[in-house]
Image (cartoon, rainbow, N blue to C red; front, side):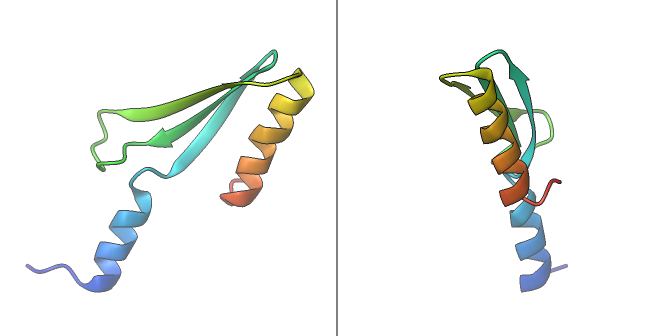
Length: 69
């Protein structure tokens, strides 16, 4: 069965999608689903910030941008 453009588009949107964050001290870790669509892995991006407040602001900004609030 062939995939429609809409189905393909919806499937592609989930690949590498933002999933959440963790903040500990001045470090923010952003979690993304697998860029290949495989559920057995994910991608984490860890960023050292200048302060815990900046780390939290970056995490909350990602939530706003990706519609997770």
